Amino acid sequence: MHILVTGGAGYIGSHAVRLFLERGHEVWVYDNLVYGHRAAVPSERLIVGDLSETHRLDQILVEKRIDAVVHFAAYTYVGESVTNPAKYWHNNLVNTLSLMECLRRHGVARFVFSSTAATFGIPEKMPITEDTPQHPINPYGASKLAVEQALADYTHAYKWGFAALRYFNASGAYAGGTIGEDHTPETHLIPLIIQAAQGKRPHIEIFGTDYSTPDGTCIRDYIHVDDLAEAHLLALEKLQPGQQMHYNLGIGRGYSVREVISAVEAVTGKKVPVKEGPRRAGDPPVLVASFEKIQRALGWTPRYTDITAIIETAWNWHRTHPKGYRSK
Ligand code: UDP
Image 1: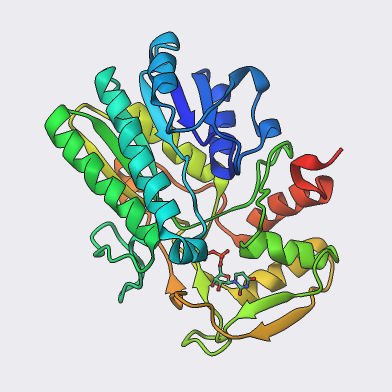
Image 2: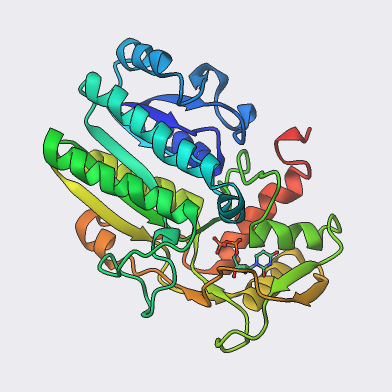
């Protein structure tokens, strides 16, 4: 397949790109490098550009004979989406709609969309299945859900094949050690704990210790980025015209913040200074995915099924890249 990967220089995108190339696909990365990293993808595969440059996208679709798009490009900071919703609605929805229109003009009808557990909001029942109602509680989740809905309409009317993959907590790094997680600012739990273990931060602050969970801290479902990447490829390969796929992607098991901290200590052999702080607004106590649907339909199953194995790959990346992609 000739695959265009938007946002392919980002954390999850770069892992997908590496896998698609390894499996022999013709891959082109389209990334504005606002959050992505030039060094995260092979330079000869990278096209630097913004989703708003539709004439360039038109040109690329023709020149590179693109027949499928995997769309990662988006802003992903939940807190920022609350304080600056315009930025999120514009980039995540308006720019995606304009990308979809380019694809429609050129008859590209295979689309895999990077969606999120944030489309579910605070569900009552765990684990979260594809039948769980989607009621996002922030503009980030709402913008992603709006795209899912637009894609469903395109699929119906224009015979697209599309997959919405709702990631839970993406984590870890490629075991080969060449790519990994590098966000500025970093807000995700595992890299923050690792940085505290490395002495780059004074401590890790636990956001809330009074939740109704066994140890009082929030529980999340951490899924390895390479398992996410594999799910994208399976979906791409199996999509048929007129078909919609909606899949939740997690490992089906949750870990509390305290459990993640202990696992980082075990993997790194370092004591992590901890500060107990108040809850972060909008954090549901527990989010765990059911992955039964994608397992049944596509045969996907996570290769990384426990937090220690995931953290080992993250630690390998952070240990060898103390400044992320600016290391060396
Ligand atoms: N968390 C925390 N301290 C931090 C960052 C995160 O206690 O400095 C908690 C957060 O409240 C959540 C979990 O760790 O329960 C995972 O947060 P993250 O931001 O990594 O992902 P999210 O679940 O928000 O997508």
